[in-house]
Image (cartoon, rainbow, N blue to C red; front, side, top):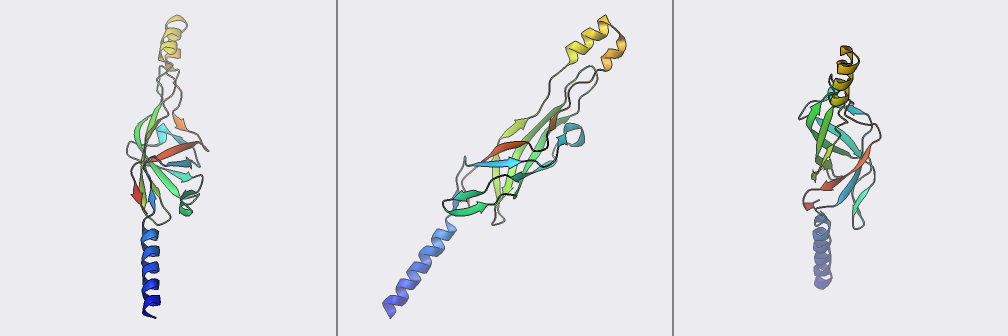
Length: 159
C-alpha cells in the first residue's frame, strides 16, 4: 500500500513538473492579422495597435495561444502625408501577445509601412505647369484591413 501511495505521489509530481515546463521558444512565429485599417494620420507615437492571432500556437500537443487572442504593436513613427508630395510614414514594433494562461509573451520585430515620396514630381510639375500642383500630396501610410504578418517570440517564455 505504501509503495502504491509513493508511486502515485511520484507520478503526480512528474505530471505537475511537465505541466509547468511548457516553454515557447525564442524565434517561434505567430501569425497575426489586423481587423481594421490603421492610418498614420490617426495614430500617435507610443499608441498600441491591436492585432489578433490568426492561427493556434502549440507547444508539443498543448495549446498555448488560441486563434483570436490579442497581440499588440507599438507605433514608433506616425507621420501623415503632406503637401508637395511628402510621403506618409508609419512604423510599428511588436510588443506582446496574450497567451491562454494570461501571460504576456514578448515579441520582436518591426514593420515599416512608409509610402512612396512624390516630392520631386510635385515640385517639377509645379515649376513647369502651375504653382497649385505644389499641393499634390504624397501617399498615405496605412496598415490595410485584413493585413497579415508574422510576429516572432523575443525570448524563451515559460507558460
